[in-house]
Length: 304
Ligand SMILES: NC(=O)c1ccc[n+]([C@@H]2O[C@H](COP(=O)([O-])OP(=O)(O)OC[C@H]3O[C@@H](n4cnc5c(N)ncnc54)[C@H](OP(=O)(O)O)[C@@H]3O)[C@@H](O)[C@H]2O)c1
Image (cartoon, rainbow, N blue to C red; front, side):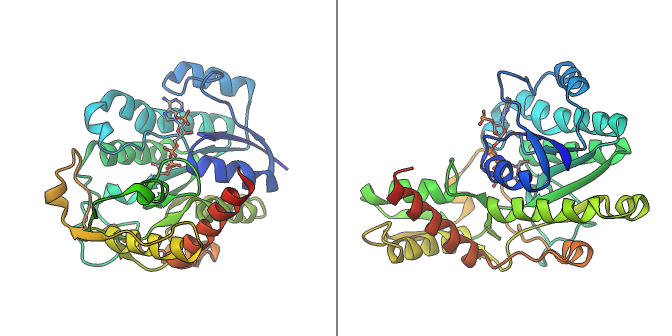
């Protein structure tokens, strides 16, 4: 059994991982009071007391527009923290599992991005996440970086939960962009994949394990625009009895919304490498969404 340290356990991916990672070993989840993730020295000292076989870093600053205003915190969490964790992983011979994003790309490619495609982030969030990737790669530690996209879960603040909470009292139509295409991916699916990856890695020889250390794209199968995602959320939510009727959704474009941070038009990530290396192929985004809405319904019914 492994000793695992999970950072960011309260986030949407962190919550899914907290449940799943127990399949691999003992999971420590230090919270903000126990460990200040913006303080590199504190993080290094904490790991001296709590050495791990596997460090899973689900902590990040994920407020993409907020990152434009608070670049210091964004750098601390998305760049310096993974850099510190990579140094620790190298020193303690641990594995580091880290998460990154489609926002490392400029979105101009017409095909889904592969891992080796040139990166060119167009906003502070993507630049800081890319710097985090580079720090891990150059550290010499053994790592798995999973780039995923459009993450959501049944709880926390994300596009799905926001849309569901606003819908019942909505008087005017929702305006949702139809010029950004990607794959909405459930946190549960990513967490399940992490367990599968590390179950395989622990069974490998040192040499085999070293060979699979690297960066991987991991998203739900298929693609849609945010506009299509919103409509499908409402369609399924009515079907599940979570909403009485489907609110009106109108398509708009990214320019009209005038948000602080630019988003890539093409967020599609090619998943062939992870499929070939670990045999992992996530289900279609519609399937993951339906599962998530069923879970929301269950929680609503049980009052949790
Ligand atoms: N969300 C997406 O659409 C998306 C897409 C692609 C990739 N990713 C990547 O996937 C990973 C997980 O994302 P997520 O959506 O699960 O994130 P999330 O829900 O925003 O959770 C972030 C976690 O980081 C913690 N955190 C943030 N600031 C902190 C601070 N100053 N000190 C200590 N802890 C702090 C949060 O703790 P609190 O709960 O205490 O705030 C929370 O546990 C990230 O690496 C992200 O970049 C996300």
